[in-house]
Structure formats: structure tokens, C-alpha cells
Image (cartoon, rainbow, N blue to C red):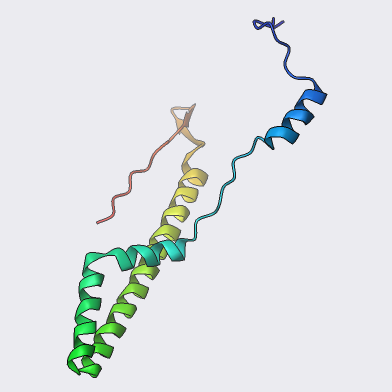
Length: 128
């Protein structure tokens, strides 16, 4: 039997209700991040994107609107492709981690009529 090592027995129900009214619930407010907005901000912050946008603006200022439109559309297309590739990598990563968990966590191997449980904790993946 466990003995109480502390002099206090904890809060009563009335004290808990009063504390919740005074301080609020004991919960962490977590806001789910907007991945699209984060990817857009990171793309705009990229120095190469800033340089290409500046070059596009210079094309517009110098009167070469077709070149400016072409460069701006290329920037948008590359940013969309980058976002698509990052999304596919995340989907692939989550799929692989779920597959590893399903296939390898509790595999049973028969070795000379002895059963050994394997606990494979990590599968190292390298992206090049």
C-alpha cells in the first residue's frame, strides 16, 4: 500500500472548481499551423525568390513587360512545384513511418524453434 509522503491530501472538489473559475482550465491552447501559409512565407523569404522578383520588377520598369510577365509566372510556377514536392515528401514520410510501425514493431522470428521478438525502433532513411 502506498503512503502519502506529503502533508497535503490535494484539493477538494470545491477548491478545484474555484481554481478553475479563477485561473481557467489547465489546458494548453494549441493552434494548428497553416502549412500553406508557412510555405508561402518561406518561399517569399528565400533570397533567390527576392532576387528574381526584383529582376521581374526591373523588366516591368524598363518596358519589357513580356519578359517581366514570363519571369513572374516562372517564379510562381517554381514556387507551386516546390510546395507540391514538399507536400509529397511529407506524405511519403508519414506513410513510411506508419508502415514501419505496422510491419516491424512486433515481428516474430523463428530461429531454431525459438521465438524471439524483434523491436526495431528506427529505420534510417536518407534523402539525397
